Image (cartoon, rainbow, N blue to C red):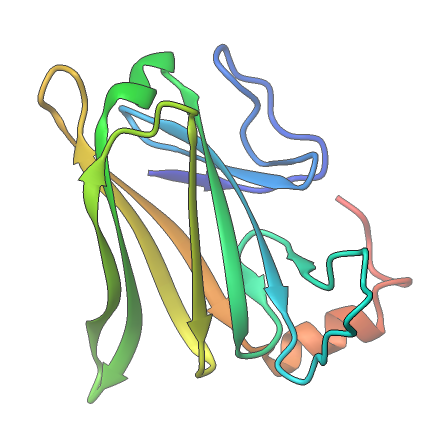
Length: 171
């Protein structure tokens, strides 16, 4: 699986890989997706007459704090992906004694996504590493698995990058 992010996207024959237009892309052998996410801060109180969405964009799966999260996955290539039977499974990665385990948080049954868009809303109540799996079979009955990484909470390195972002080299 190739996971890449860049400010301009990398040219490809099918679709640009990386970060482009608010979405990140992930390319596997059988499927290319674009995904974007939004989170609602835990302490947000919605006014009754609000017209604007209070959700904050998540860049490539980095959620600053535990929160309610909405993920939108665009089935980019091949176009026949809209006919694939795809399920979703959200897991939390837990490390105990140098061993990683996946704890399943939610799953959805396999279905077609004729619009080309797969959406999911969930609440992440703890900081840590999560993976949203998109799994199923293509029209040739080949297994497909795409991992959308989600990191909840910022590390000290993230705080330093944000603090000194003006002085850091732009790639």
